[in-house]
Length: 71
Image 1 (cartoon, rainbow, N blue to C red):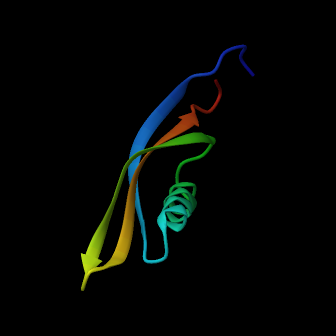
Image 2 (image 1 turned 135 degrees about the vertical axis):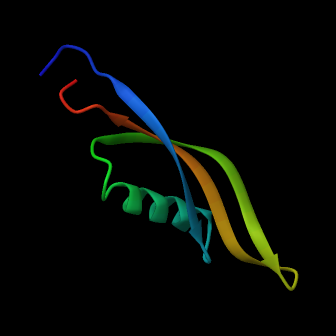
């Protein structure tokens, strides 16, 4: 283990029909299947799709930070 950490950020998009929090959870759950050592996220955009005057889909853009293995 080194005495410093190196991180990388990737951008992902999550969606949900039930809410913004679910969109975040869905994105992080799927991302964590292939990206290890996730340590934080930032919501950079929030948007949605409207059908018949109602929210049909929520969508969030996340920047996900993860530690480079071995750092």
